[in-house]
Each structure stands twice: as C-alpha cells, then as structure tokens.
Length: 211
Image (cartoon, rainbow, N blue to C red; front, side, top):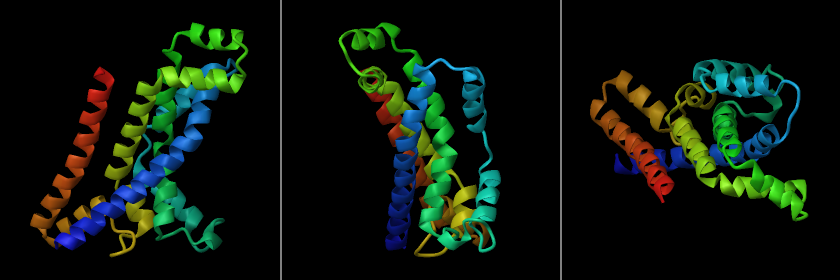
C-alpha cells in the first residue's frame, strides 16, 4: 500500500507541477500585456479572467472530453485518458488564477519603475521584466495558488484521465474511488497527504511574503 500511495503522490505532483509550469509560461506574457498596456476593453478582459477563476472543473472536463474524444476535433492527438490530457486540462483551469493574481501584483508596482527603465533606454521587454521583478512576491503567490488549485481538483482529472490505475490515477481521483469502495483508511491517508502538500506550500509562500 505504501508503494501505491507513493506512486500516486508522485504522479499527482508531476502532473500538477507540469500543468502549473505550462500555465505560467503562457499566463505571464498575458498578464504583462494586460497590466502594462492601455487598450479598449481592458476592464472587460480583466473581469473575464476573474470570472473564469470560478469555472466548475466538471464543466471544463466535459468541454475537454468532447474535444479529446475519438470523434472530437482533437481526437487524433489521443489526449483522452492520458496524463498529457490531464496536464492540458489543469493548465487551462488554472490560467485565470495566474493571470488575475499576476495582473493585480503588476498593477500594484510603482509606475515610476517602468518609466525609469524606459528613460534609461530599456526596451519594452526589459521594462516589463523590471516590473515583473518588483512584483515577484505577488507572482509567486499566483503560481502557488494555481498549483494548489490544480492538485486539489477532481473534475478534469476524473473525466479526462479516466482514473486508470498506474497511469492516470492521482490523489483526488483515488480518494473518490476508494470512498465509494469503502476503503476509508486509504482515503484518509490520501487526504492527509493532499492537505499536507497544500498547507505546506501555503505556509511557505506566507513566510516568503513576510521576508
């Protein structure tokens, strides 16, 4: 049982960690573009990302299921019932969290920092990086919050991963399955591990923000 718990935990960390990395890679440029540029509909775009934070995971799971199924437009990619499918689904799910939190952090930075960088001859890209550096604590909080959301979600992991033993089974889907089977002791162990991961990362970021 110990080996199974370790295997599932490591798989959960790998899938959710990869999803968080993927989402961070495309969310950071989006957040920088929103926060550092003025354009028509900016408020609406920010509101949209904020609203998408509350998207039910089962709703996203159903949408992706239809896209990834054999008869769906992305069926030939064979993403359904695979770790890659879960990663993509979780990355999409947490993108609004990273974008919204990061935009808030970037907009709280003194605008003079960006202006100073431009005055010193920095390109738009370097000026953006300077602002991002000043907002690193808020940006880190965004990434950690996104990871916690990814590793704790159930809908996408169950509907897209299929809860296949030794392949796509993660902590949340194991808890759901074993609860139905009446394996309460195993569920408790899985729950404790999940809570420790989430609480440890939250505590770590809180300590980081105090420094």
